[in-house]
Amino acid sequence: MSPCRVCSHPIREFFDFERQPLSSAFPRPGELDQEYFFRLAVGMCESCTLVQLIDAVPPERAHHQGYPYHSAASSVMCKHFEQTARRFLETELTGADPFVVEIGANDGVMLRTCGDAGVRHLAVEPSGATGVRAHRAFFDVDAATRIRDTDGAADVVYAANTICGVTDLRPIFEGLDVLLAPDGVFVFEDPYLGEIIERTSFDQIYDEHVFFFTVRAVGALATRYGFELVDIERLPVHGGQIRYTIARPGRRAPSPAVADALRTEQARGLAELVTLERFAARVQRIRDDLVALLHELRAGGARIVGYGATAKSSTMANYCGIGPNLIPFVCDTTPAKQGRLTPGSHIPVRPVEAFADPYPDFALLFAWNHAEEIMAKERAFREAGGQWILYVPQVHIV
Ligand code: JHZ
Ligand code: ZN
Image (cartoon, rainbow, N blue to C red; front, side, top):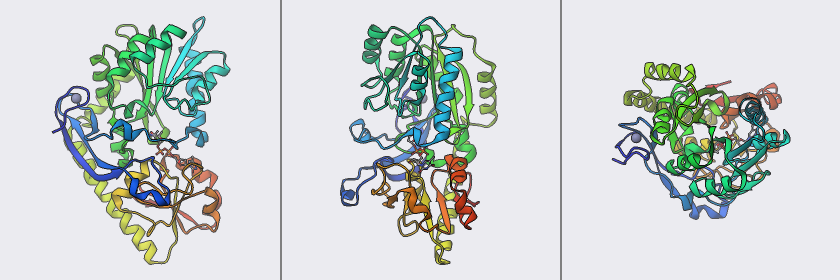
């Protein structure tokens, strides 16, 4: 059994997706022999209950060039990050000369909103590609020390969809200890295990998501590294996340939301292996139903295309064995994905203009987390008689 990445106790495996590619490495048609695969399996730590991947991709493989994800591709996500910034401006960045840092800032929407309000800000992002001032490094003690020496202590350190992919969390917390002001907060948001189980959204499990947090596990994690979990908030984005607020111990009264969530998690058995085993059975059911539906529709002569070449759908397509034989192409707005193939499953990615040229009979919504936004934008597809296929929380046609 592998040891837990946080407390070193054994991890109990509850699902094995077997051989999977890097979810964001879209090969060109001539590059298929260069694809990297690893065993994607998940388990729960016997002691601290943190759910995590059994094997992780080595860092030199994981951080391949030209990372193609842009959070600003979704107007809902842009609004989300602007609102996050406004909240910080109202509640945390209220001192004389506040300073906000974001780890892994992607398109920089949150920081730019703070910057527009005149607040000092910095992205800590190895690629530097954020459109805002950036310290090009991974966040650790060294980066934190350099930043503090130049800019002073931070009132807020924020990270969205980043911490769950950091295999070694210790350097993050050591860096926070250096950089955070005495009353500063570390706020991060990631997919919530409770929601993944509730929706059977198994495709949240892929190489870039190493940890699947619960309030209980994050509370234990914070304590272990000398901090305290003081608040949580559920977020509707990306299929259901939690935003955790962590402070230095004793500096803030924990909000009742933390104790409430702990009680709910206990009642739902989120720290029990049997809950995860039941989840595993539902995942297999979704695969069987989806594969059967696609074969049936194809046999009836229907044309089906994919919509949104997400990282998530890499797990879905590879686990279900869905390739270009069932889905001839998937459309996506990201130029860096277009003209390439989906990782492992090798479905061609085409610009969204291909969607209406002509409309297919069915669209398999890979980007189900953006369903509202995409269905509103593609209203004409339904008006033309098209139907959406979703596979979360179960296979259904809309
Ligand atoms: P989306 C990535 O996951 C990877 P993915 C990462 N690990 C993570 O956690 C999340 O992001 C946050 C396209 N699209 O957001 C754009 C359209 O074509 O579900 C994207 O390629 N039309 C960091 O990839 C994809 O769909 C649209 O209207 O699972 C959406 O990817 C919209 C809204 C999106 O994240
Ligand atoms: Zn553990």
